[in-house]
Amino acid sequence: MTIITILKHVPDAESRVHAKDGALDLSGATFVIDGMDEYGVEQALRMREAGLDAEVVALGYGPASTTQALRTALAMGADRAILLEGDELHDPLTVALALAAVVRDEAADLVFVGGKQADWDSAALGPALAEALAWAHVDWTTAFALEGDAFEAVHDVDDGSETLRGRLPVVVTTQQGLNEPRYPTLPNIMKAKRKPLDTRPADVGQELMVVTGHTGTERERRREMLEGDARSAAAELVRRLRGEAKVLREEGR
Amino acid sequence: MILIVAEHAHGAARKSAFELVAAGRALATASGSPLAALVIGADPSSVATELAGFVSDVHVVADPGLEPMRAEMATRAVVHAAETLGARVVLVAGSRSGQSYGPRVAMRLGGAYLEDVTDVSYEGSDVVAQRPTYLARISATVRSQAERVVVSVKLGALAVAPLADTTGRVHQLDVPFADEDRRLEPGPREAAAKGRVALEEADVVVCGGRGFGSSEAFERHVVGLADRLGAGVGATRAVVDAGWRPYGEQIGQTGKAVAPSLYLALAVSGAVQHLSGMNRSRVIVAVNKDADAPIFKVADYGIVGDVLEVVPALEEALAGRD
Ligand SMILES: Cc1cc2nc3c(=O)[nH]c(=O)nc-3n(C[C@H](O)[C@H](O)[C@H](O)COP(=O)(O)OP(=O)(O)OC[C@H]3O[C@@H](n4cnc5c(N)ncnc54)[C@H](O)[C@@H]3O)c2cc1C
Image 1 (cartoon, chains in turn orange, red):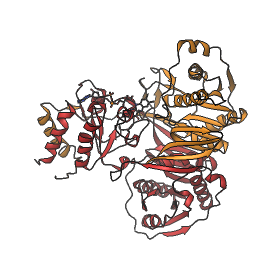
Image 2 (cartoon, protein in one colour):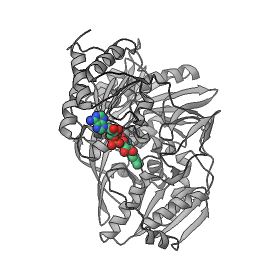
Image 3 (cartoon, protein in one colour):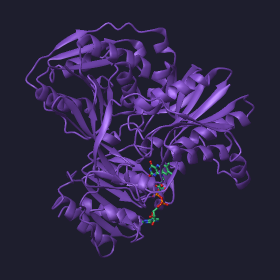
Image 4 (tube, chains in turn blue, cyan):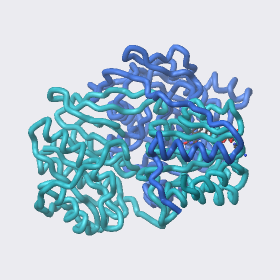
């Protein structure tokens, strides 16, 4: 079988990201594979290592620089990679439609994709991709086991977690807790350079959602340090919260 | 028309439903179109009655397969309602459920999807919205380019709507579900801590970090303080990874996003991924023994000190009235 893991190349969380005059400034950012996507690569590799006869294909949509994220996945152990090359898009629905065509071409039956993107903060790509393929999806997955074509997954829901059973094909969105992604070793990074990476131009439609501006979300904060020992600082804090900040509805106990 | 999909639990509408009513009313007024609500579930009649005090038409889809929520069942129900009723805008909650079926509904309707927005309005005939991006460090303005648009609204981002002076009508809708809508079989569920305020609905959140050192200390100090304040309990990923607290309490990029009036960050370092889940809080308090901890950069009030001393002192100060 073929397992596809979808990857995105995003600014490192520690990078400086800010907005100026309505535009986004990423000039200070270094880019890495999205941490949320790594869980999917790891999961596919573990399933294969546990004896599943599967080819693991890393797939990314984006500009040529996305190749770096794909190389990371190859260095982790994916067999080959496909870059669907196209301009940066914001609308996950448009990207999903383009990716779905590749998933169909590859006759894959299992797709992993990160639960939430670190750049667009979007959790929509997985469900949208499943919809484009007319497949089921399982989101926010923390455990996934496959036997034949039957799977059992545990995923987070609004009030806790839930077990879901179903049959392939399925799109699974991944998150922390699913596994601990491995670091690529140096020999594997070298080997990854010789693994096949196929670049295709993306065939994308018109975006139905466009971005027209950016602003920073940083708020003015008081940044007041309350001095003194624990007791006097705590007493002062309670006074401030009741008084100037007015955020303590008193319980009065 | 503007259609809101009202979520509910234990026979009552969730707070998010009334946030959607507020957003829906504003859009309906701006576009001169009617507002209706959709309630889906196994037997959501009590929720429908409740909502009829807020909107003039409430549509109900009842099917046992809708509880627990399955994304494809919900998608079929919402798409059918939107098409039958001729909805131009569909508002759904930015909950785990809403974000699970929202994109599918948008795609099946051939519409746009504006996701997890903190604000939504009409600009001319376009629906525009604000949404956090880049780990909530940026707010992007997004605009729909489609005839139809599905908007998921971030939990807690909008004020809830006041009761209207209406007794709305309740209508039953029959939805032609397909076998494939039921292809995922829900199994056992684990509920998050019971009896506690839902994190996203809490007005005060007490969040503890790894600095507490043990689950016992976390329980005594963080949960203890939260109980006194009637607050929600939050945790950092380090705490969740250590197994001290359930994942459902995690705040941040991979956890929940909250925006309470008061957020107490206790022994929390303030990593970017954590900040993205709480930086919209109105007032932030940080207690950390490291004066250089990044959390102080976003705090309104800071105390440099040991949480094991400061939290008991806080409890004491709260107990005594001034
Ligand atoms: C892809 C990805 C997603 C992530 N998602 C999240 C997320 O959703 N939520 C999240 O929280 N993190 C997330 N993280 C992890 C994040 O980067 C941090 O590692 C985490 O938030 C740190 O938790 P912490 O502050 O409890 O622990 P630490 O960083 O270890 O900080 C502990 C703090 O406690 C202080 N301290 C220690 N003892 C005391 C004491 N006795 N009194 C007072 N202060 C004390 C220390 O000075 C320190 O500042 C994510 C990371 C990645 C890579």
